[in-house]
Image (cartoon, rainbow, N blue to C red):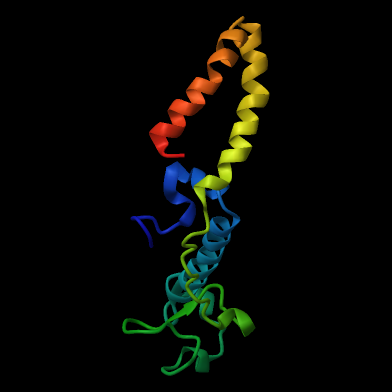
Length: 147
C-alpha cells in the first residue's frame, strides 16, 4: 500500500490507472491474489452440518485433511476448491514505484492542446490575440515552474 491506497489505480479518483500500464497490471495481480485468499479462507461452509457436503468422502472432513479451512473454529470445506497450480498462493505484487513519470505527458498534452485550442480560439476570434501572447505566456510559465 502506498499513500493510503491499496490499488495503484486508486489515486485521482481511480483515474491514475490510465497513467501507467504497470498500475493496471499491479491491481490485476492484486485482485487475483485477493480472490484466491477469499476462496481459500472465507468462501466456505461447515463441513459437518451442511447438506452440500453430505455426500463427500468422510476423510475430507476429518481433522488434518488438506481441504479443511486453516485455523481454529468448526471444520469447513471450500465451496470452490483451489486445485492444481491454483492452490499455490499468489504472491503480493510489488508496488509499481516510479512507473509513472509526469513529464511523459508534457509533449502529448501540448500537442493535443495546440491541435484543439487553436481552431476553437479562431472560431471565437481570439486566435490572433492568443497567438501573439503565446510566447509571453510560455516564458512566464517556464519561469514560474523552473523549466
